[in-house]
Amino acid sequence: MTSYQIFLFLHSWIRWFILVLGLVVIIKSYSGWFGNKPYLKGDNGMSAGFIGLLHLNLLIGLILYFFLSPYVQQAFSDFGAAMRDSYLRFWAVEHIAVNIIAVVVAQIGRARSKRATTDVAKHKTAAIFYTIAMVLLLSRIPWGEAERWFRGL
Ligand code: HEM
View 1: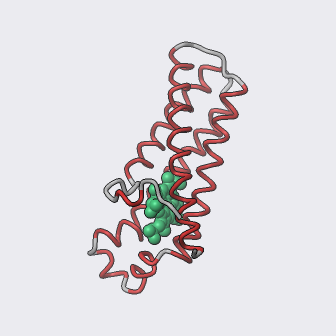
View 2 (view 1 turned 90 degrees about the horizontal axis):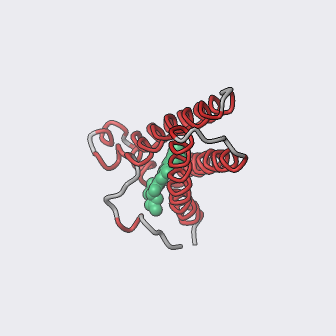
């Protein structure tokens, strides 16, 4: 088992935890916003967990990107040619750029939601920013390759 396989496995599975927890947090935020509900400790905890998992996968992604992924290495060996190859361009540019933006959007949302002074404003801020982050994440996951869905070691 290589370190590439281990990091890819972790990165791939953490994706599902991010998507499921993110979906729960988003649904609860909209329900809190439109239902005028209190912002509970559990809401704060789940929001923190969502951000924590995003940062963890960002870190693992950076390790894959700079040290382990053969696709990224191939892309950097001839960057000009890689930009004309949609598969290599996806791994060298699109996946990293859009996902980093998604993490930043989510992080800004978390900070603003914490600072908001009313419970409804906390829910509303989380709902809007996390929805944008989620759409960005979903748009740059390689759904077309079934072998990447539930990766084994
Ligand atoms: C934070 C949200 C992110 C999510 C949800 C995510 C999701 C994924 C998924 C589902 C895969 C396919 C895994 C597989 O083949 O089983 C993947 C691969 C990869 N991701 Fe991410 N990713 C994220 C962020 C990043 C970031 C920020 C980087 C770069 C810094 C990155 C770099 C990579 C690399 C290099 C690969 C492996 C390509 C390969 O060698 O096959 N990811 N990512």
